[in-house]
Length: 333
Image 1 (spheres, rainbow, N blue to C red):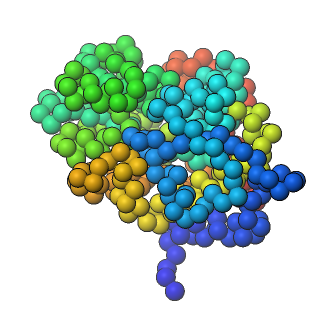
Image 2: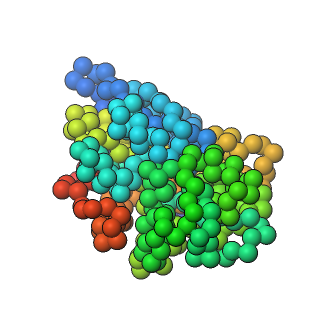
């Protein structure tokens, strides 16, 4: 019998819970036996979420769920689609949830999302070695309403840097940032995976990660959680069975990735990485596997709360939300 490591035990526990719960994905069905439909974020090239749907489909993990996949254009856009009602469920981070709550839209983070995968890159011949070296220089970033941007701003602030005041920030769609960087119009690119891995494979130099900067400035020893699956609190309340099934689905997909990180290389085209980019493909399992967290609970919630507390302390947001913006729908099951 093979030895069960911690990741295997986590997956075994999930599978056992599935068996005991009488096929919980089907538990999303209403009394009449028809599943409640959910408009969910589709896989998007150029984002770390791109492989989630193909992994789920490879292993038949979404059976019993009625999912309408709706594409977004990347960070920032999917959050807008959730708040507008175009999506029921999308990626959402804690600071974004706090900002939304202050505007009267209560977003609830209910299931694993992604660990922080925002990287600082410079060209191979660049003289800059650290983000601090780039103060006053032009840097390209994702949109300022994205989790990637907000975490970059926070990780800078805990290190005593006012990101928006001390850098010449060119924020916009991820592809725009890539174009600015490749043309040499900016000195650095702050971007997400898998784009960072593609550029590193082509010779760009990674000088920092937002996760490392957060740990240095905050003293935290835990990974910086970027986001979660989020929905309006009213949607979760009205669709509790579907939300719980989506939570279980996401955990199982992440478990499959950790059991076989080679899936990330196998599904490289979903990331937007061509078959000829062999160096980038070879790097995917090593650089991206830990982007997909196995656990949802105290570790993630402590990360979210620490981010919110620091964001208030440093003036990035005005106040904490009146209600907690995260929950564990599987607690006690």
